[in-house]
Amino acid sequence: MRVTHMLIARRTQNYIQDAMQRLARTQEQMSTGRKVLRLSDDPPALSQLLNVRAAVERNQQYMRNITDGLSYLDGADTALGTTGELLQKAIEYAIQGANGTLEPDDMAAIGEQIDKMIDELVDIANTTVGGKYIFAGTKNDRPPFRRDGDNIFYQGNLERVSREIMDQANYAIDVPAVILDDGNPDTPGGVFGEAQVSGDEYELTGGIFQVLLALRNSLKAADASGVNDSIGALNDQLDHILRYRVQVGARTSHFESVRDQLQDQELRLTQVLSSLEDADVARVAVDLSRQQLAYQAALAAGARILETSLLDYLR
Image 1 (cartoon, rainbow, N blue to C red):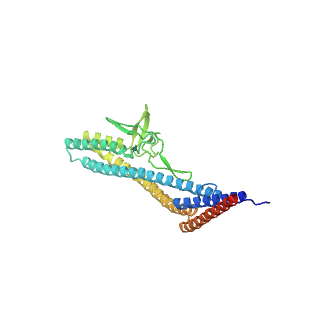
Image 2: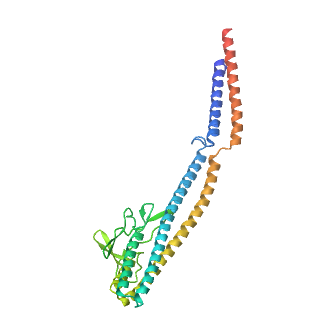
Image 3: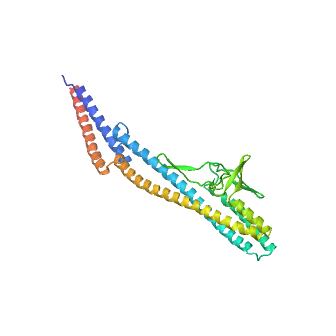
């Protein structure tokens, strides 16, 4: 095979282009800090890299869901705690009204205080977190409770609000505000009691509101015996609220435990991601220096070949 000047020049040109491409890739690694820049660089490594990135994104979404869930649970715990304090105060009022020493006007005045408590309880039941009503089920864009005289209505729904905090693991972040009244006194009620369907909403038939209304009526009627009967019902409601607070506390602890696990997992995933993605800066710097020299040498060699070819032509 005859080696012509044209063949030598073409091979030199190819060598220069290869050197330039290697130099450009190393410069890109240096500027981005990444060793795998595109699929063609290392398909198996890039595939693993994409899988780890997806795992990191899922992990971060679970963390956001947990943060959201903990906000809901914290709001519920605060509301339940305030409700418990309100019931404690109502019990104190009931004890005063049941001792038989108060005048009817005094009992009626206490009844007015209980009536104000009912309004306070409506406000508590309409607690919001992040603009969402936490006792409204999934219909949480408007206040779920409203009072119309002696009637309390629920305008939310009975669906639970949940968040996925692990793979295929959804956990409720709310507590049921009301449940349907099935006529069975042994059926545990929602936080604020039982209800029956009334048009496009629910009317409460039992629970805290009804106990407070009964206490208020007994006080206004100066019925010490009726007031005394309310004390036991108020204590039952207080126990009921405490049970829900225990549930909320247990769920909060579980969410915090999962959050800690996810934080540890994210640290490990970040380390794996770094090992797959980040370039060894010191090594890349050495490669860059070597490839710059190789590229300059290729250019110099090409220049000499072209110069020789031109002189031969002139001769």
